[in-house]
Length: 111
Image (tube, rainbow, N blue to C red):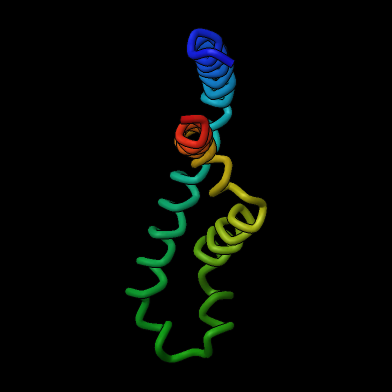
């Protein structure tokens, strides 16, 4: 394969990669907003849980029972991470960098 064909293949690959990543952007934005909202809710609930003077006087589970907002936020955040929200949020930036690295390796091996 000559260098002109390689350049054309690389340009076509780059166009397809750009198209694929641009299709991921709307969904990624929604997942980022969900993650931000749940994280802020968890942080707010944690702050209220920590400044409550009754937290030190009762058992851990009673304390969680007394603060349902924090408990539900925490469970939701943990469930989102188990569902793979971290992959959905990072995917559009991860794919191009990994594929560029792979292309560089392939190009170096051809030389």
